[in-house]
Image (tube, rainbow, N blue to C red; front, side, top):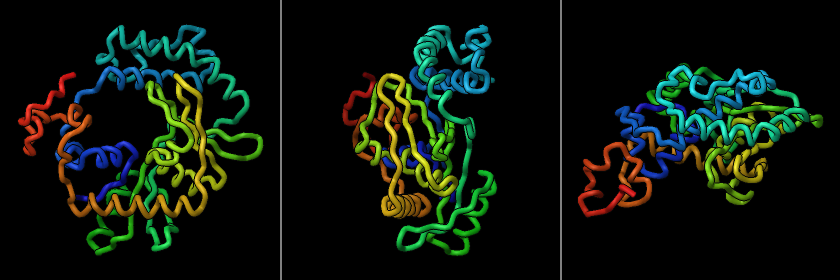
Length: 272
């Protein structure tokens, strides 16, 4: 498969089912967006508006149906759910911002580079398309220790001590504790990027329906994460796309009713 930078969502999809990853990123087959995904998209757009204009909601300048360019896909019930969630979060976000300086909003970062045997790395920032071209050139040259990663940070702030905090809003009901967050690959990729860009950093998951959880990885943990990331990346580049036999991920597969691996032909019910 042609090399491309790995995002947290693409790596998680590969871990869930390599065959689904192949369909999504090589064949361009997308599964329909769920209601939870649409609510989350509107919530994130509203938070971005609030960060850039703190009084926008009070002025009635936030229309939850027209927060994005493609607002026709959002129904009134979805917009209402997003607004209810956002209203409850506004005081928390305002208090959070009053104690920190904003560094970036929806910050899109792509890194490419070589990972050494000890897990240390030399990364360079590139635009996504340039990074893809660079990775493909390295692949043609036979390089096997290169990797590309991409992260889009919801919010980046800095506190009085000079520590940079990368914030990710989480709108779902599922939450993680500190130990679980250390195993989360979105947090790991964000930590790799943040350590490269900022030095002193912390990654915070702002659970809208729970307590925020923060972490930073030690140098040895970063090395371990980079080596594991390289291993996953190699599998993708080397066209390893076996389908997993069964699991909850199957009902999110865009072609599960016609799966060539025969999962659905065994009478499994993925409609619930």
